[in-house]
Image 1 (cartoon, rainbow, N blue to C red):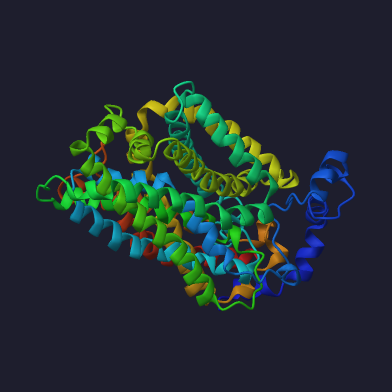
Image 2: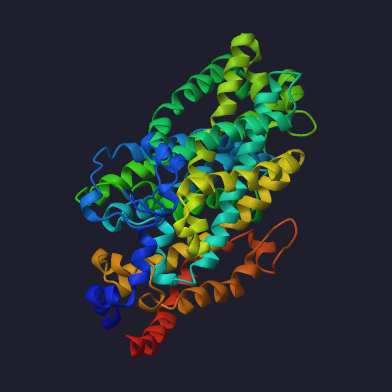
Length: 506
Protein backbone atom coordinates (compact mmCIF):
# COMPACT_ATOMS: atom_id res chain seq x y z
CA UNK A 1 0.00 0.00 0.00
CA UNK A 2 1.40 3.45 -0.89
CA UNK A 3 2.57 5.76 1.90
CA UNK A 4 -0.08 8.39 1.29
CA UNK A 5 -2.88 5.88 1.66
CA UNK A 6 -1.38 4.56 4.90
CA UNK A 7 -1.29 8.11 6.07
CA UNK A 8 -4.94 8.58 5.08
CA UNK A 9 -5.86 5.49 7.07
CA UNK A 10 -4.04 6.58 10.24
CA UNK A 11 -4.60 10.32 10.21
CA UNK A 12 -7.94 10.57 12.01
CA UNK A 13 -6.50 12.59 14.88
CA UNK A 14 -4.84 15.12 12.59
CA UNK A 15 -7.95 15.49 10.52
CA UNK A 16 -10.11 16.08 13.57
CA UNK A 17 -7.75 18.82 14.73
CA UNK A 18 -7.67 20.45 11.30
CA UNK A 19 -11.39 20.32 10.55
CA UNK A 20 -13.48 21.50 13.48
CA UNK A 21 -15.49 23.56 11.02
CA UNK A 22 -16.15 20.43 9.02
CA UNK A 23 -17.68 18.75 12.08
CA UNK A 24 -19.86 21.79 12.56
CA UNK A 25 -21.05 21.48 8.97
CA UNK A 26 -21.89 17.83 9.47
CA UNK A 27 -24.05 18.61 12.46
CA UNK A 28 -26.32 20.61 10.19
CA UNK A 29 -27.54 17.56 8.37
CA UNK A 30 -27.15 14.48 10.51
CA UNK A 31 -30.28 13.01 12.12
CA UNK A 32 -31.05 14.47 15.50
CA UNK A 33 -29.48 17.86 14.85
CA UNK A 34 -31.20 20.71 16.69
CA UNK A 35 -29.80 23.50 14.54
CA UNK A 36 -29.99 24.69 10.99
CA UNK A 37 -32.45 23.10 8.59
CA UNK A 38 -33.76 20.50 10.99
CA UNK A 39 -34.85 23.10 13.53
CA UNK A 40 -37.63 24.21 11.20
CA UNK A 41 -41.03 22.69 12.14
CA UNK A 42 -41.64 21.54 8.56
CA UNK A 43 -38.28 19.73 8.46
CA UNK A 44 -39.07 18.01 11.76
CA UNK A 45 -42.45 16.93 10.43
CA UNK A 46 -40.89 15.49 7.29
CA UNK A 47 -38.39 13.47 9.32
CA UNK A 48 -41.20 12.16 11.55
CA UNK A 49 -43.02 10.98 8.42
CA UNK A 50 -40.01 8.87 7.43
CA UNK A 51 -38.46 11.20 4.85
CA UNK A 52 -34.75 10.38 4.44
CA UNK A 53 -32.64 13.45 5.07
CA UNK A 54 -29.09 12.09 4.77
CA UNK A 55 -27.18 13.31 1.75
CA UNK A 56 -23.53 12.68 0.92
CA UNK A 57 -22.40 12.08 4.52
CA UNK A 58 -21.00 8.52 4.85
CA UNK A 59 -22.95 6.01 6.92
CA UNK A 60 -20.92 4.77 9.93
CA UNK A 61 -20.41 1.02 10.12
CA UNK A 62 -22.65 0.68 13.17
CA UNK A 63 -25.52 2.26 11.21
CA UNK A 64 -25.20 -0.07 8.22
CA UNK A 65 -27.72 -2.61 9.48
CA UNK A 66 -30.02 -3.32 6.52
CA UNK A 67 -29.90 -7.05 5.74
CA UNK A 68 -32.68 -7.20 3.14
CA UNK A 69 -30.14 -7.47 0.37
CA UNK A 70 -32.63 -8.73 -2.21
CA UNK A 71 -34.04 -5.20 -2.38
CA UNK A 72 -31.20 -4.12 -4.66
CA UNK A 73 -32.41 -6.60 -7.29
CA UNK A 74 -35.84 -4.97 -7.32
CA UNK A 75 -34.39 -1.46 -7.41
CA UNK A 76 -32.54 -2.14 -10.65
CA UNK A 77 -35.17 -4.51 -12.05
CA UNK A 78 -37.97 -1.95 -11.67
CA UNK A 79 -35.77 0.87 -12.95
CA UNK A 80 -35.20 -1.04 -16.17
CA UNK A 81 -38.48 -2.92 -16.56
CA UNK A 82 -40.22 -0.11 -18.40
CA UNK A 83 -40.95 1.36 -21.80
CA UNK A 84 -37.55 3.08 -21.98
CA UNK A 85 -35.81 -0.30 -22.23
CA UNK A 86 -38.39 -1.31 -24.84
CA UNK A 87 -37.73 1.92 -26.77
CA UNK A 88 -33.96 1.48 -26.63
CA UNK A 89 -34.32 -1.89 -28.37
CA UNK A 90 -36.23 -0.27 -31.23
CA UNK A 91 -33.16 1.83 -32.08
CA UNK A 92 -31.39 -1.19 -33.62
CA UNK A 93 -33.82 -1.46 -36.55
CA UNK A 94 -34.94 2.19 -36.69
CA UNK A 95 -31.67 4.10 -36.31
CA UNK A 96 -29.10 1.53 -37.47
CA UNK A 97 -31.01 -0.64 -39.94
CA UNK A 98 -30.34 -3.92 -38.12
CA UNK A 99 -32.52 -7.00 -38.44
CA UNK A 100 -34.02 -8.84 -35.51
CA UNK A 101 -31.28 -11.44 -35.15
CA UNK A 102 -28.45 -8.92 -35.28
CA UNK A 103 -30.25 -6.51 -32.94
CA UNK A 104 -30.84 -9.23 -30.37
CA UNK A 105 -27.28 -10.52 -30.55
CA UNK A 106 -25.88 -7.04 -29.98
CA UNK A 107 -28.33 -6.50 -27.12
CA UNK A 108 -27.41 -9.79 -25.45
CA UNK A 109 -23.62 -9.80 -25.72
CA UNK A 110 -22.96 -6.14 -25.05
CA UNK A 111 -25.28 -6.13 -22.05
CA UNK A 112 -23.50 -9.20 -20.66
CA UNK A 113 -20.32 -7.12 -20.64
CA UNK A 114 -21.68 -3.69 -19.79
CA UNK A 115 -23.84 -4.77 -16.82
CA UNK A 116 -20.81 -6.13 -14.98
CA UNK A 117 -19.27 -2.74 -14.16
CA UNK A 118 -22.22 -1.12 -12.34
CA UNK A 119 -23.09 -4.45 -10.67
CA UNK A 120 -19.56 -4.67 -9.28
CA UNK A 121 -19.63 -1.08 -7.99
CA UNK A 122 -22.85 -1.91 -6.11
CA UNK A 123 -20.71 -4.12 -3.88
CA UNK A 124 -18.70 -1.12 -2.64
CA UNK A 125 -21.64 0.53 -0.87
CA UNK A 126 -21.83 -1.86 2.11
CA UNK A 127 -18.05 -1.76 2.54
CA UNK A 128 -17.60 2.03 2.45
CA UNK A 129 -21.00 3.35 3.53
CA UNK A 130 -20.62 6.04 0.89
CA UNK A 131 -22.60 7.36 -2.04
CA UNK A 132 -20.96 6.66 -5.37
CA UNK A 133 -19.81 10.23 -6.00
CA UNK A 134 -18.49 10.50 -2.44
CA UNK A 135 -16.40 7.35 -2.97
CA UNK A 136 -15.09 8.88 -6.17
CA UNK A 137 -13.48 11.74 -4.26
CA UNK A 138 -10.81 9.21 -3.22
CA UNK A 139 -9.60 9.09 -6.83
CA UNK A 140 -10.91 12.33 -8.41
CA UNK A 141 -10.35 14.53 -5.37
CA UNK A 142 -12.57 17.00 -3.56
CA UNK A 143 -12.66 19.50 -6.41
CA UNK A 144 -11.84 17.20 -9.32
CA UNK A 145 -14.99 15.14 -8.74
CA UNK A 146 -17.04 18.22 -9.61
CA UNK A 147 -16.47 17.49 -13.32
CA UNK A 148 -17.78 13.88 -13.20
CA UNK A 149 -20.64 15.10 -10.99
CA UNK A 150 -21.64 17.62 -13.65
CA UNK A 151 -21.40 15.01 -16.41
CA UNK A 152 -23.41 12.57 -14.33
CA UNK A 153 -26.05 15.19 -13.62
CA UNK A 154 -26.38 15.79 -17.34
CA UNK A 155 -26.76 12.05 -17.91
CA UNK A 156 -29.29 11.57 -15.12
CA UNK A 157 -31.27 14.57 -16.29
CA UNK A 158 -31.21 13.15 -19.82
CA UNK A 159 -32.62 9.83 -18.60
CA UNK A 160 -35.39 11.69 -16.82
CA UNK A 161 -36.21 13.65 -19.95
CA UNK A 162 -36.59 10.60 -22.20
CA UNK A 163 -38.49 8.72 -19.49
CA UNK A 164 -40.80 11.67 -18.97
CA UNK A 165 -41.47 11.90 -22.70
CA UNK A 166 -42.33 8.21 -22.95
CA UNK A 167 -44.54 8.20 -19.89
CA UNK A 168 -46.36 11.35 -20.93
CA UNK A 169 -46.97 10.05 -24.44
CA UNK A 170 -48.31 6.76 -23.08
CA UNK A 171 -50.75 8.54 -20.76
CA UNK A 172 -51.90 10.84 -23.54
CA UNK A 173 -52.43 7.93 -25.94
CA UNK A 174 -55.38 6.59 -23.90
CA UNK A 175 -57.28 9.89 -23.90
CA UNK A 176 -57.89 12.29 -26.75
CA UNK A 177 -58.45 15.04 -24.18
CA UNK A 178 -54.96 14.78 -22.69
CA UNK A 179 -51.93 16.34 -24.32
CA UNK A 180 -48.40 14.99 -24.10
CA UNK A 181 -47.47 17.96 -21.92
CA UNK A 182 -50.10 17.14 -19.29
CA UNK A 183 -49.06 13.49 -19.30
CA UNK A 184 -45.43 14.45 -18.74
CA UNK A 185 -46.36 16.67 -15.79
CA UNK A 186 -48.35 13.85 -14.15
CA UNK A 187 -45.43 11.43 -14.54
CA UNK A 188 -42.96 13.82 -12.94
CA UNK A 189 -45.23 14.70 -10.03
CA UNK A 190 -45.65 11.02 -9.12
CA UNK A 191 -41.91 10.34 -9.43
CA UNK A 192 -41.07 13.40 -7.35
CA UNK A 193 -43.29 12.28 -4.49
CA UNK A 194 -41.57 8.87 -4.38
CA UNK A 195 -38.07 10.32 -4.62
CA UNK A 196 -38.82 13.00 -2.04
CA UNK A 197 -39.47 10.39 0.64
CA UNK A 198 -36.11 8.71 0.18
CA UNK A 199 -34.57 5.30 0.80
CA UNK A 200 -37.37 3.40 2.57
CA UNK A 201 -40.28 4.47 0.38
CA UNK A 202 -38.13 4.19 -2.73
CA UNK A 203 -37.20 0.60 -1.93
CA UNK A 204 -40.81 -0.29 -1.16
CA UNK A 205 -42.02 1.21 -4.44
CA UNK A 206 -39.36 -0.55 -6.49
CA UNK A 207 -40.35 -3.89 -4.96
CA UNK A 208 -43.95 -3.62 -6.14
CA UNK A 209 -43.95 -1.38 -9.21
CA UNK A 210 -42.64 -4.00 -11.63
CA UNK A 211 -45.54 -6.44 -11.25
CA UNK A 212 -48.28 -4.40 -13.01
CA UNK A 213 -45.80 -3.71 -15.81
CA UNK A 214 -45.20 -7.45 -16.19
CA UNK A 215 -48.95 -8.04 -16.51
CA UNK A 216 -49.21 -5.35 -19.19
CA UNK A 217 -46.38 -6.77 -21.29
CA UNK A 218 -47.68 -10.32 -20.94
CA UNK A 219 -51.12 -9.25 -22.17
CA UNK A 220 -49.52 -7.33 -25.05
CA UNK A 221 -47.63 -10.48 -26.04
CA UNK A 222 -50.74 -12.60 -25.62
CA UNK A 223 -52.87 -10.55 -28.00
CA UNK A 224 -50.14 -9.45 -30.41
CA UNK A 225 -47.42 -12.06 -30.18
CA UNK A 226 -48.57 -13.85 -33.35
CA UNK A 227 -47.67 -10.73 -35.37
CA UNK A 228 -44.03 -10.90 -34.30
CA UNK A 229 -43.51 -13.69 -36.82
CA UNK A 230 -44.21 -11.21 -39.64
CA UNK A 231 -40.85 -9.52 -39.32
CA UNK A 232 -39.44 -8.04 -42.50
CA UNK A 233 -36.30 -9.76 -43.82
CA UNK A 234 -33.10 -8.05 -42.78
CA UNK A 235 -30.37 -6.66 -44.96
CA UNK A 236 -26.81 -7.78 -44.14
CA UNK A 237 -25.47 -5.86 -41.14
CA UNK A 238 -22.28 -3.82 -41.39
CA UNK A 239 -19.65 -3.62 -38.68
CA UNK A 240 -20.30 0.11 -38.42
CA UNK A 241 -24.00 -0.33 -37.69
CA UNK A 242 -23.37 -3.12 -35.17
CA UNK A 243 -20.79 -1.18 -33.16
CA UNK A 244 -22.79 2.04 -33.31
CA UNK A 245 -25.85 0.26 -31.90
CA UNK A 246 -23.58 -1.37 -29.32
CA UNK A 247 -22.46 2.07 -28.14
CA UNK A 248 -26.10 2.95 -27.51
CA UNK A 249 -26.68 -0.30 -25.62
CA UNK A 250 -23.57 0.21 -23.50
CA UNK A 251 -24.38 3.86 -22.84
CA UNK A 252 -27.75 2.79 -21.48
CA UNK A 253 -26.31 0.65 -18.66
CA UNK A 254 -22.71 1.76 -18.02
CA UNK A 255 -23.90 5.12 -16.71
CA UNK A 256 -25.47 3.31 -13.76
CA UNK A 257 -21.88 2.96 -12.52
CA UNK A 258 -21.90 6.56 -11.31
CA UNK A 259 -24.89 5.92 -9.01
CA UNK A 260 -24.33 2.25 -8.10
CA UNK A 261 -23.61 2.44 -4.37
CA UNK A 262 -26.22 5.13 -3.71
CA UNK A 263 -28.68 2.31 -3.04
CA UNK A 264 -26.42 -0.13 -1.14
CA UNK A 265 -24.67 2.10 1.42
CA UNK A 266 -27.09 1.11 4.22
CA UNK A 267 -26.46 -2.63 3.84
CA UNK A 268 -24.47 -4.52 6.46
CA UNK A 269 -20.75 -4.61 5.59
CA UNK A 270 -20.70 -8.33 6.40
CA UNK A 271 -22.75 -9.26 3.32
CA UNK A 272 -20.79 -11.36 0.79
CA UNK A 273 -19.91 -9.14 -2.13
CA UNK A 274 -20.86 -11.86 -4.60
CA UNK A 275 -24.40 -11.76 -3.26
CA UNK A 276 -24.80 -8.04 -3.91
CA UNK A 277 -23.13 -8.42 -7.33
CA UNK A 278 -25.52 -11.09 -8.59
CA UNK A 279 -28.60 -9.37 -7.21
CA UNK A 280 -27.58 -6.19 -9.03
CA UNK A 281 -26.35 -7.91 -12.20
CA UNK A 282 -29.60 -9.83 -12.65
CA UNK A 283 -31.55 -6.68 -11.86
CA UNK A 284 -29.86 -5.04 -14.84
CA UNK A 285 -29.57 -7.74 -17.43
CA UNK A 286 -32.89 -9.60 -17.15
CA UNK A 287 -35.27 -6.69 -17.83
CA UNK A 288 -32.95 -4.87 -20.21
CA UNK A 289 -32.28 -7.81 -22.52
CA UNK A 290 -35.87 -9.04 -22.54
CA UNK A 291 -37.48 -5.67 -23.23
CA UNK A 292 -34.86 -4.42 -25.67
CA UNK A 293 -35.25 -7.58 -27.76
CA UNK A 294 -39.03 -7.25 -27.58
CA UNK A 295 -38.79 -3.63 -28.73
CA UNK A 296 -36.69 -4.63 -31.73
CA UNK A 297 -39.16 -7.38 -32.69
CA UNK A 298 -42.26 -5.21 -32.33
CA UNK A 299 -40.96 -2.25 -34.31
CA UNK A 300 -39.89 -4.55 -37.15
CA UNK A 301 -43.34 -6.19 -37.24
CA UNK A 302 -45.25 -2.90 -37.01
CA UNK A 303 -45.35 -2.10 -40.77
CA UNK A 304 -47.18 -5.40 -41.39
CA UNK A 305 -49.90 -4.75 -38.77
CA UNK A 306 -52.14 -1.80 -39.78
CA UNK A 307 -53.23 -0.90 -36.24
CA UNK A 308 -49.64 -0.99 -35.00
CA UNK A 309 -48.43 1.11 -37.91
CA UNK A 310 -51.16 3.66 -37.21
CA UNK A 311 -50.31 3.82 -33.51
CA UNK A 312 -46.62 4.16 -34.26
CA UNK A 313 -47.33 6.85 -36.85
CA UNK A 314 -45.02 9.12 -38.75
CA UNK A 315 -43.71 10.62 -35.51
CA UNK A 316 -42.51 7.17 -34.32
CA UNK A 317 -44.57 7.19 -31.15
CA UNK A 318 -43.47 4.13 -29.17
CA UNK A 319 -46.18 4.67 -26.57
CA UNK A 320 -48.80 4.78 -29.31
CA UNK A 321 -47.41 1.52 -30.66
CA UNK A 322 -47.81 -0.16 -27.27
CA UNK A 323 -51.33 1.21 -26.91
CA UNK A 324 -52.17 -0.24 -30.34
CA UNK A 325 -50.83 -3.64 -29.26
CA UNK A 326 -53.16 -3.59 -26.25
CA UNK A 327 -56.19 -2.19 -28.10
CA UNK A 328 -57.77 -5.65 -28.82
CA UNK A 329 -58.70 -5.94 -25.11
CA UNK A 330 -60.62 -2.64 -25.15
CA UNK A 331 -60.76 -0.49 -22.04
CA UNK A 332 -58.63 -3.00 -20.15
CA UNK A 333 -55.96 -2.31 -22.74
CA UNK A 334 -56.18 1.40 -22.00
CA UNK A 335 -55.81 0.64 -18.31
CA UNK A 336 -52.72 -1.45 -19.02
CA UNK A 337 -51.29 1.37 -21.14
CA UNK A 338 -51.65 3.66 -18.13
CA UNK A 339 -49.71 1.11 -16.07
CA UNK A 340 -47.00 1.06 -18.72
CA UNK A 341 -46.83 4.85 -18.64
CA UNK A 342 -46.32 4.73 -14.88
CA UNK A 343 -43.49 2.22 -15.28
CA UNK A 344 -41.07 5.06 -15.99
CA UNK A 345 -41.72 6.60 -12.56
CA UNK A 346 -39.59 3.86 -10.98
CA UNK A 347 -36.64 5.02 -13.07
CA UNK A 348 -37.26 8.74 -12.69
CA UNK A 349 -37.68 8.48 -8.90
CA UNK A 350 -34.37 6.64 -8.44
CA UNK A 351 -32.63 9.02 -10.80
CA UNK A 352 -33.94 12.06 -8.93
CA UNK A 353 -32.69 10.41 -5.74
CA UNK A 354 -29.15 10.08 -7.10
CA UNK A 355 -29.21 13.56 -8.59
CA UNK A 356 -29.45 14.92 -5.04
CA UNK A 357 -25.99 13.67 -4.15
CA UNK A 358 -24.45 14.90 -7.38
CA UNK A 359 -25.71 18.41 -6.64
CA UNK A 360 -24.14 18.22 -3.18
CA UNK A 361 -20.82 16.98 -4.55
CA UNK A 362 -20.81 19.54 -7.35
CA UNK A 363 -21.39 22.38 -4.86
CA UNK A 364 -19.91 21.14 -1.55
CA UNK A 365 -21.57 23.92 0.46
CA UNK A 366 -24.89 22.36 -0.53
CA UNK A 367 -24.16 19.37 1.70
CA UNK A 368 -25.87 21.48 4.37
CA UNK A 369 -29.12 21.36 2.39
CA UNK A 370 -31.40 18.35 3.01
CA UNK A 371 -31.35 15.74 0.28
CA UNK A 372 -35.02 16.01 -0.62
CA UNK A 373 -34.68 19.66 -1.69
CA UNK A 374 -32.67 18.56 -4.70
CA UNK A 375 -35.39 16.15 -5.81
CA UNK A 376 -37.47 19.24 -6.43
CA UNK A 377 -34.60 20.98 -8.20
CA UNK A 378 -34.05 17.98 -10.49
CA UNK A 379 -37.73 17.93 -11.37
CA UNK A 380 -37.80 21.64 -12.13
CA UNK A 381 -34.89 21.17 -14.54
CA UNK A 382 -36.06 18.02 -16.37
CA UNK A 383 -39.79 18.72 -16.63
CA UNK A 384 -39.70 21.66 -19.07
CA UNK A 385 -36.95 20.02 -21.12
CA UNK A 386 -39.13 16.92 -21.49
CA UNK A 387 -41.99 19.03 -22.78
CA UNK A 388 -39.73 20.83 -25.26
CA UNK A 389 -38.10 17.61 -26.52
CA UNK A 390 -41.24 15.49 -26.71
CA UNK A 391 -41.53 15.75 -30.49
CA UNK A 392 -37.89 14.85 -31.16
CA UNK A 393 -37.73 11.66 -29.15
CA UNK A 394 -35.68 9.37 -31.38
CA UNK A 395 -33.05 11.97 -32.19
CA UNK A 396 -32.84 12.86 -28.49
CA UNK A 397 -32.59 9.25 -27.32
CA UNK A 398 -30.02 8.12 -29.91
CA UNK A 399 -27.66 11.06 -29.45
CA UNK A 400 -27.97 11.04 -25.66
CA UNK A 401 -27.34 7.34 -25.09
CA UNK A 402 -24.40 7.32 -27.49
CA UNK A 403 -22.66 10.26 -25.86
CA UNK A 404 -22.93 9.41 -22.17
CA UNK A 405 -21.17 6.07 -22.54
CA UNK A 406 -17.80 7.69 -23.23
CA UNK A 407 -17.16 9.47 -19.96
CA UNK A 408 -18.81 6.74 -17.88
CA UNK A 409 -16.43 4.12 -19.30
CA UNK A 410 -13.41 6.27 -18.48
CA UNK A 411 -14.77 6.98 -15.00
CA UNK A 412 -15.29 3.28 -14.27
CA UNK A 413 -11.76 2.38 -15.31
CA UNK A 414 -10.21 5.05 -13.09
CA UNK A 415 -12.06 4.12 -9.90
CA UNK A 416 -11.21 0.44 -10.50
CA UNK A 417 -7.49 1.12 -10.99
CA UNK A 418 -7.41 3.38 -7.92
CA UNK A 419 -9.10 0.76 -5.76
CA UNK A 420 -7.33 -2.39 -6.90
CA UNK A 421 -3.84 -1.09 -7.62
CA UNK A 422 -3.24 2.00 -5.52
CA UNK A 423 -5.43 1.01 -2.55
CA UNK A 424 -4.74 -2.73 -2.88
CA UNK A 425 -8.46 -3.45 -2.67
CA UNK A 426 -8.52 -2.26 0.94
CA UNK A 427 -11.83 -0.54 1.77
CA UNK A 428 -10.44 0.75 5.07
CA UNK A 429 -8.40 3.30 3.09
CA UNK A 430 -11.66 5.13 2.33
CA UNK A 431 -11.28 7.00 5.61
CA UNK A 432 -14.57 8.57 6.72
CA UNK A 433 -12.69 11.27 8.58
CA UNK A 434 -11.41 12.84 5.35
CA UNK A 435 -14.33 12.45 2.96
CA UNK A 436 -14.83 16.24 2.78
CA UNK A 437 -11.35 17.52 3.71
CA UNK A 438 -9.71 18.72 0.46
CA UNK A 439 -6.15 18.64 1.75
CA UNK A 440 -6.39 14.99 2.79
CA UNK A 441 -7.90 13.67 -0.42
CA UNK A 442 -6.07 13.12 -3.72
CA UNK A 443 -5.63 16.22 -5.84
CA UNK A 444 -7.64 14.58 -8.63
CA UNK A 445 -5.35 15.93 -11.34
CA UNK A 446 -4.37 12.41 -12.45
CA UNK A 447 -7.97 11.25 -12.82
CA UNK A 448 -9.12 14.34 -14.70
CA UNK A 449 -6.06 14.27 -16.97
CA UNK A 450 -6.62 10.59 -17.75
CA UNK A 451 -10.21 11.28 -18.80
CA UNK A 452 -9.29 14.30 -20.91
CA UNK A 453 -6.30 12.64 -22.61
CA UNK A 454 -8.33 9.53 -23.43
CA UNK A 455 -10.58 11.67 -25.62
CA UNK A 456 -7.66 12.17 -27.99
CA UNK A 457 -8.44 8.65 -29.24
CA UNK A 458 -12.13 8.51 -28.32
CA UNK A 459 -13.02 11.39 -30.65
CA UNK A 460 -11.56 9.74 -33.80
CA UNK A 461 -13.48 6.58 -32.83
CA UNK A 462 -16.87 8.31 -32.67
CA UNK A 463 -19.60 7.74 -35.22
CA UNK A 464 -22.45 10.11 -34.42
CA UNK A 465 -25.03 11.83 -36.59
CA UNK A 466 -23.29 15.14 -35.93
CA UNK A 467 -19.70 13.85 -36.14
CA UNK A 468 -17.93 10.92 -37.76
CA UNK A 469 -14.35 10.30 -36.73
CA UNK A 470 -11.82 8.87 -39.18
CA UNK A 471 -11.76 5.54 -37.33
CA UNK A 472 -15.43 5.46 -36.37
CA UNK A 473 -16.63 6.03 -39.93
CA UNK A 474 -15.12 2.67 -40.86
CA UNK A 475 -15.45 0.64 -37.67
CA UNK A 476 -18.63 2.13 -36.25
CA UNK A 477 -18.71 3.94 -32.93
CA UNK A 478 -16.18 2.25 -30.66
CA UNK A 479 -15.60 5.23 -28.39
CA UNK A 480 -16.82 3.59 -25.18
CA UNK A 481 -14.75 0.43 -25.85
CA UNK A 482 -11.64 2.60 -26.28
CA UNK A 483 -12.41 4.83 -23.29
CA UNK A 484 -12.28 2.08 -20.67
CA UNK A 485 -8.82 0.57 -21.27
CA UNK A 486 -7.21 3.82 -22.38
CA UNK A 487 -8.30 5.87 -19.37
CA UNK A 488 -7.23 3.04 -17.05
CA UNK A 489 -3.78 2.79 -18.65
CA UNK A 490 -3.25 6.55 -18.58
CA UNK A 491 -4.20 6.72 -14.93
CA UNK A 492 -1.31 4.47 -13.81
CA UNK A 493 1.61 6.84 -14.59
CA UNK A 494 -0.40 9.98 -13.92
CA UNK A 495 -1.46 8.82 -10.47
CA UNK A 496 2.08 7.71 -9.61
CA UNK A 497 3.27 11.19 -10.56
CA UNK A 498 0.55 12.78 -8.48
CA UNK A 499 1.46 10.66 -5.45
CA UNK A 500 5.12 11.57 -5.80
CA UNK A 501 4.42 15.27 -5.42
CA UNK A 502 1.43 15.08 -3.10
CA UNK A 503 3.35 13.03 -0.51
CA UNK A 504 5.22 16.20 0.40
CA UNK A 505 1.89 17.68 1.51
CA UNK A 506 1.16 14.86 3.95
